[in-house]
Amino acid sequence: MRILAIGAHPDDLEILCGGTLAKYSNKGHKIFMAHLCNGNMGGKDISPEELAEIRDKEAKKAGSLINAEVLGPIAGDLDLYNTREMRRGVIDIIRYAKPDIIITHSPDDYMPDHIITSQLVFDAAFTATLPNYKTKYPAHELITPIFYMDTVVGLKFQPTHYVDITDFFEIKKKMLLCHESQYKWIKGHHLSDPINLIETMAKFRGLQCGVLYAEGFKIESVWGRVRPIELT
Image 1 (cartoon, helix red, strand yellow):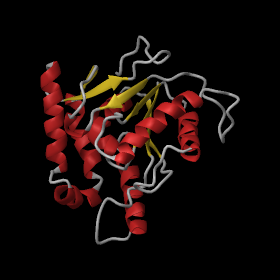
Image 2 (cartoon, one colour; image 1 turned 30 degrees about the vertical axis):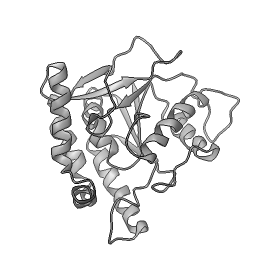
Image 3 (cartoon, one colour; image 1 turned 120 degrees about the horizontal axis):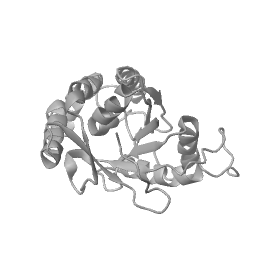
Image 4 (spheres, one colour; image 1 turned 30 degrees about the horizontal axis):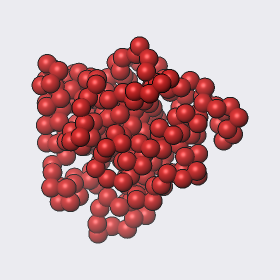
């Protein structure tokens, strides 16, 4: 299968679905990790241009650990909007990846870039199937199931699916540790240690489904997207 995960920023996918992507990769599936924003606002005492370059390198390093192809960005942080132009950018990400499953942010997440990413992916995933809607790449005519990732710390989110990532938690952690620029920023701005955050979340979701570590997902339950398919 071909798995496309689309997050707002470099490191969002590692935090929210890195274990699942590592598990898919281990089974021989093709993984695409896209971030729509370049991460240029995720810090201080460094120029946005320099930070964007650093975060691009970090994203590619993290993706390489699971042989994932890293795609994006199409906007700067907090410059992502649900516009025709940006929707076309997401359409071409989908048409390029030709996914069997799309994973993205919940529409109920905590900040604008996450919420708009969710909206763009939902809209683009259908439009990408239409041959008469012309963009850089030809249509991907499969109406792809969409799974929403957990929200950060699980607020306003009740999973419909769980993935056991017990055997893949260490690689998830290594992927997140590639994002060195974010350690001090997240600890200071978000008052949270990134590694403690992902471990607490994974243990909590694991407790819910009877394993040591898990990630939670919610399927987009609309006509055409619900199929007899499991995440892994």
